[in-house]
Image 1 (cartoon, rainbow over the protein chains, first blue to last red):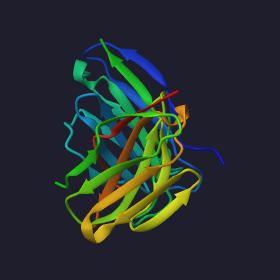
Image 2: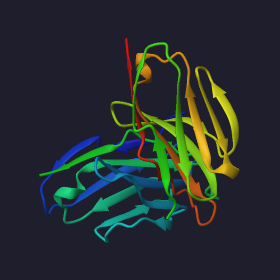
Image 3: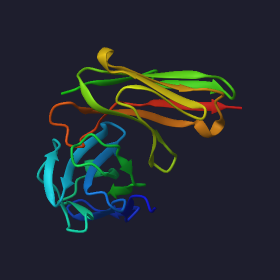
Image 4: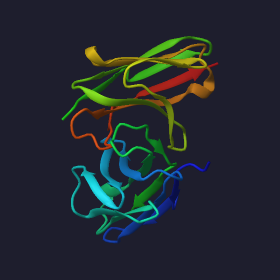
Length: 114
Length: 111
């Protein structure tokens, strides 16, 4: 069974640009969540989707957005990139709807903003 | 919000040694997971352990939910155990698959 797949794995952008990251969950998993990891702030929750609905959102500015498609694949978008957005972005999927299930993470998308 | 504290922050072991990593959390939780972050950044699931004790090879974990802590035991450590270990919890109220991570324990196992 394939794991959580994230694309692209690495990307470099300049300030002011926007970026879209993609995540394909484990087959059958309908919950997808996103996390940002930086050396200064550690791992922080961005948002979580279930059946195309955002159920939970972290404390990030509106420049960070996401969506989920009917096949459970998810994308997140960051607009007007800032240097501080350089980070490892991790996607996780879960089987359960209730929020008490085990989360499985992808390998991440490493974003560098110059 | 919930606070998740891990100790020690850094740990250096000789190969073959045993160690215990601790995770304290400040509120009641639905879910607790331990992860090992590999050098490429992926979080590898070690245990899903909201309560009780589990073992997987040289690793075992215990969560005492009523006292709000969890322990990860590594026995007979190997160099491949090096990396960062995170615990992450989901609040009992309003969880929704939202994990709050601790700051991690950086483990280095030397020959």
